[in-house]
Image 1 (tube, rainbow, N blue to C red):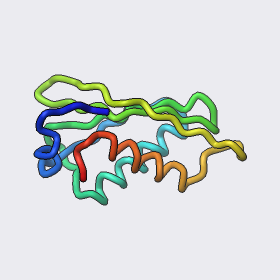
Image 2 (tube, one colour):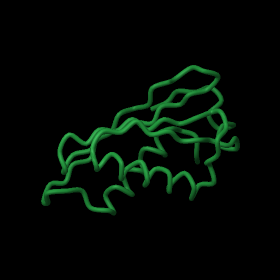
Image 3 (tube, rainbow, N blue to C red):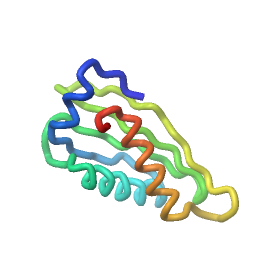
Length: 110
């Protein structure tokens, strides 16, 4: 989780998202996080920036975190993981739920 003294104030500031991803599932997660941020009204090309760092080592596994970059300094977010237990790949709803959880973990949105 990001520990920020002024996190509530950041929710009203515009945010941008960059994705550092490895694997097809991670690319899909980038789109899901982007959609979640858009739904919450928080995307632009401004500072602060969010960086999604995601890896999909197998089709059924996804590890990710969202870092905050502000004033040139990067604060690492808490890493989460989602795994499909009964299928070969992650379900679309599972990606959306994971994206929602990652955005919520930033502490930038109520």
